[in-house]
Each structure stands twice: as C-alpha cells, then as structure tokens.
Image (cartoon, rainbow, N blue to C red; front, side, top):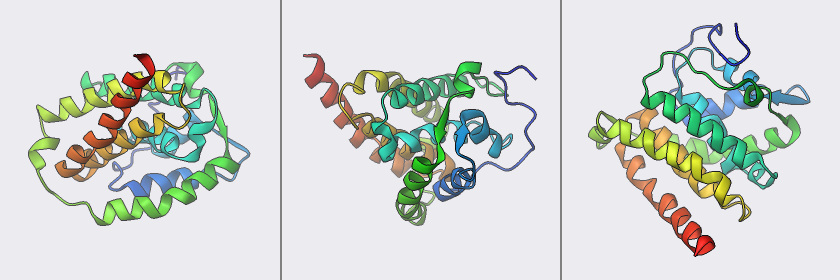
Length: 203
C-alpha cells in the first residue's frame, strides 16, 4: 500500500451521528500522539465523511489555537471535498499529511468538551428538507466545504476565526450524515460570519 493511500482498512458502515465521530477519535487517545493516518484507519473504509469531519471537529475545538493546525486541517478538508466532488472510490491524501500528528492530551480534552454539543446536534437532527442533501445540492455542499477548507489558512491570521468555517463544515457534514437539509441552511450563518471576517481583514 502506498503511504498516501488508505485502502486496506476494515470495512465498517459510515458514521450515523456526530457523537460517533467524536467517540471514535476519543478511543484513539491512549497513546501520546495520534496521526492523521491513525484517525482515518479507525473509521475503516467508511466513506469520505469521517475524513471530512475529523479535521473540522478539531478546528472547532480549542485546538484551533495551535499555530498552523487550522491550515493543515483546511488543506485536508479541501482535498477530501474535491475527491468527494470527483466521486473517487478511495481516499487519497499526501504522505506528509497522513504523518501529521497531534498530542492526545489536548485532543482528549477537546473531544470531551465537544461531546455534549455533538449529542445535542444528534438529538435535534432528522430527515428534513431532504432535497438539500441530494444531487445536485449535494455537490454544492461538497463544493462549499472545499471553499471553506481553502479559506482556513487565510483566516489563521485571526486566532480561532477558522473555527467559524469549521463549524459550517461540521453542520454540512451532519446534514449529509443525517439527510437533514435544515443543518445545511444553518451552516450559512458561520460561513457569513467568516466572509465578514475575511472582508474586514483584507480590505
């Protein structure tokens, strides 16, 4: 297996909730560090959504204050989203990105703090406005995630501001997981906030 491919992981069904993703990341926090490859391998061949949501969840957390981390997560989000748009069967990420790691002490704290919000989101999700999670709208959601990921390095100039875009990606990912188009609409709010920040910074 080439170092940049994740294709030999065991099969498992796609995640059905945000809480499941947070719990699976928490389960990796026994070692001192966990790499991107380790996180993706924990989900097996469960599709692209875990690879999209893991970096988004990290940037939503206080870990977004670590220098360069939001940019790395943004690049990963962009690459995953583009491959979703291209309907690739297997995820490809560059080896240098798969080897990136984060200390599990901070990761555990961050995921524990996100556990309650994740449960709240899951409890308040349902099959609403389903047409917003089907084609052609699904491709628009994936494109929006790609644009948000690409913008994260620009927003790193303002501490924690990347979290706005990451929150939007989490909501769009949740919409895709639960087929709840309402969350796709709610995602427009943090996107609008991030655009306002970008205009304020660059004008």
